[in-house]
Amino acid sequence: MSEALILFQPMGRRVAVDKKYSLLTMAEQNGVGIEATCGGKGLCGSCKVQVQGKVSPLEKEEADYLGPDAKKGYRLACQTRALEGVKVWVPENSRLHKQVILTTGYEHEMNFDPEICVWELSVPLKDTEKTDQLHERILEKLNKAAQIGSDFQWHLPSALLQGVDEKLHKSDGRVSVVTTMSGRCLEIIPGWDTDCLGLAVDLGTTTIVVYLVDLKTGRSLSVKAGMNPQVSQGEDVISRIALCRDRPDRLKKLAESVHQFITELAQQACMEAGVPFRHIFETVLVGNTAMHHIFLQLDPSGLAQAPYTPVTSDSVEISALPITPGSAPEAQIHVLPVKAGFVGADTVAAVLALDADQVTEPTLILDLGTNGEIVLATPERMLCCSCAAGPAFEGGHIKWGLRGAPGAVDQVSVSADSLVPELRVIGGGSALGICGSGLVSLVSELVKAGVVTPSGGFDPAWRGKHLREGANGWEYLLATKENTGTGQDLVLTHQDLSHLQLAKAAIHAGISLLLSEMGIPSVEKVLLAGAFGNYLDPGAACGINMFPGVVVENITSVGNAAGAGALSALISRSQRKRAQTIARRMDYLELATHPKFNETFVMSMAFSERGDD
Image 1 (cartoon, rainbow, N blue to C red):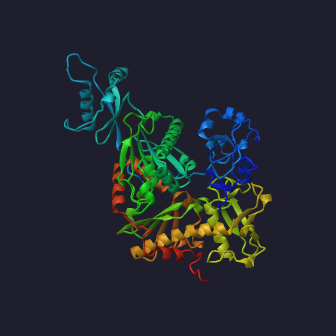
Image 2 (tube, helix red, strand yellow):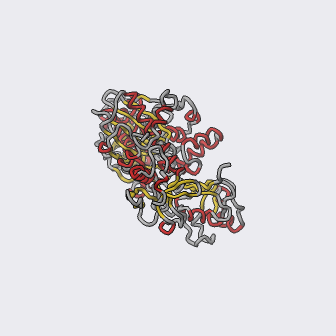
Image 3 (tube, one colour):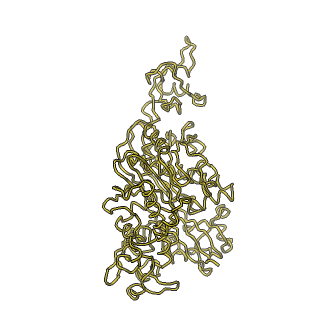
């Protein structure tokens, strides 16, 4: 029987259930930061969390404090005990430590030719001697401003004409008409020099980043980010797909949760920039295929079973108003195309931003996470695949694993003689756990020292030098309880080694098969995209034999390339068309059915290139 666990999200920390202690105490003991201003007495409400699963009964005092939130599954962590395995979502206001979210993208020159434009018109007020209608006068001025013939077909929705006569009189006939380049009118605004805004959204499985842009100049105005609220329903895409399959009503709820959160982030960005939210006229969104489907409320069930076919792979345009209430009535959302079941619009956007379709030498693009997307590009061809790496790179299923947040160890060096580790902790202070980049760094050091064998186990010969036998097998001690922020020893277990070994083998096997399929032995350039790639030490990755056919000096981190691609598509029609071409041109290699995958995966398990040493 498996051990009952408490899963704290969005931290991704799993701890064994102990019915004697409150959720707050369990969180404190295991490095999960939850606010508790009153010291856990149930007086301040700062430790409010949302719980799924069997917990201790809700007492009247707590129910009175929570009010209507109690019916939504909210509890005070200090007053609640887990009775079985439960999921605990810690809202942002209750988090002691904030997640580190990568918002900076790959910097490159972008053409500025947006789909949205603003025409400043001077429309004659009503003349009793003329019979032309108001919309005719507006269209006549539009034709003149755009320098096109009268036969051009503008689409002016009747809803925009409501109250327009009043707008004209209010501004003495001067109005700003916002249109698409294809001729669809989105808004009529009194006066000139109005704001015209666009939003680029990188919808990730774990995080969401929005970029607010001035579509009249291309200038970035604000960037906002936060944790994807869907994490409270399922920590990875597979669990969310399964939820939609087993409970179809949850698809709408999952979609609405990200719709609401994107709206909140956009409103925060507009407030920071001092511009009206209502003047966001276009949004370009990218995400992996599962996030793409859930956002659009398309059934994602087919993504979880062969042949893993998306409902649609084309780009999609929809009205923004039902998704982001309060935006302009005719505002639109453009979603970039996806390539395959697990190679989504975020990968297409990254390829776009990194000019992978224009390389002059073999180039590898890697976006590593629970699902790793890999693109191998040459001047002749682009080939991509998806690797089910599992959650180890994000700290999942690791005893003391954390996502990248203050208190997480993100880099380790180990003395070759004494095996004493030196830890770098995000934000400084005492360690609470270890994130993915720290895990790779640590294991690379232990492989180099010989403590971890090429086949993936601890070498007992090093016993006593920070290597010891724990309750569940061999473990390496990083920090004693006196030197951690949890009051418990921080260790790397042999189970942790196994989880990392499986994750790195998936990436190694994917790259190996792409190289074999393309008939090339190595690449000249490696671009690491995404949050994990940004913080990963290339030398450490090579130290555990993660990247075959790669020289460490050729590896470069490129930040949030998916976000950069979304920005590029927002401000440039030509880039948007290019994204379509990339999705069609790029070939896809399905690893799950590849005849050599199992053999290659087993060979990729070794922590060194000579795993039989």
